[in-house]
Image (cartoon, rainbow, N blue to C red):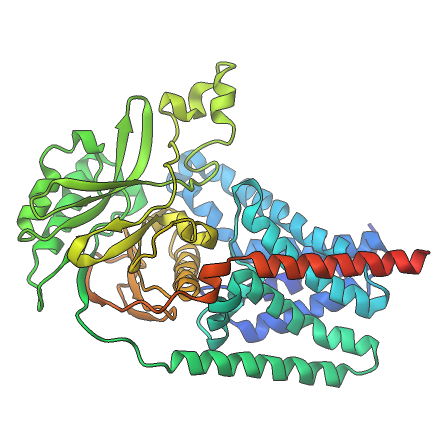
Length: 497
């Protein structure tokens, strides 16, 4: 490879890494947006298609390495045995995800001149955000539009959703580059600044709306801090269960309506838990409990959430339906079992089985909840898959798998965006953190720090009316992107006629 190509590759990778700073936990949108603009310029100025594709892929490698490095954490739980796989996992993840950015660079090639290619890359990157949100069960993580989480701009998700935020982000990034081709870079930059100011102002005005008041649901969130290296050791089981019991029975300033423990709070299958669940309700004074537990139906194993009544009787069960590929199941595992490879087949109990789908559980006094387990909070389309609107969203999770640097913070950021999109408060209870209460505008109103056991008593905020995005989903954004790509194709065909 020539020195010039190497320099271009290194520059693109560094640009992608700078864009990664916009994602949680840093949230430096003011660095990420110029980086995306500079990347758009790099791709638009590529001398040939191959150079543009290479720059797009290298930038993607930098971006996804900087955002998804938490993927190494599960391999470090038992570093002596699994640690050697960590760099290969990160390289494979970053390189694979970077193919989407290469595809965005291919869309850029449909444009005419640097300005047209800049517009094409903006459309392409937003479109690949949409594509990777759905293809192969989806991975809508660290989308371009996620750089706005924690700012007033994120309120736009109530109208256009996460893909709409990606479209906005890339429009802002591309505007100065497109205008430069028209000899008006300052005009383009000023237009982008005006658009950003308008969206920022809309979000700030929305956040200034007074919250609804009234009789609120009081919930205790229990965080046992069962680190992944110790969580499944038999000698530690009683320690972590007792932490949760003590947190549940601690005095409360106001009467509690519900106590929530995190994902896989019990080390036993539900069928083997004996009187632990009824004991938990007895020790908290008869307050209903929700907790995460594994359960079995014959050879099938489920990652589940159960809800009890005031007597400790299980009244509702929810099974996680959007499972983590290669983490909770192996794609095509049941198919491979036909050929004797049963080690990853759900039908033989060697992987989780997916539940029937999203649902709403009526908890009576505590309201109607939409339950999510961990990774499911990344999928806004699933939250729209229930016929009944909930009063609030409950996410139980075990983020201990992903360290403390970025993975849990990105999961929290996803939860904040789901609250905005649906106009619903979201309560998340994490094993090692970050346990938090989030209002319908995505603001964290109370939280527990990472790596600490304890509990948090919160009043669940009132929901807002159903948002436009809750009613329309990604349909409008999809139609807009398809229209833009069609316009690029027709313009290219017109030039070649």
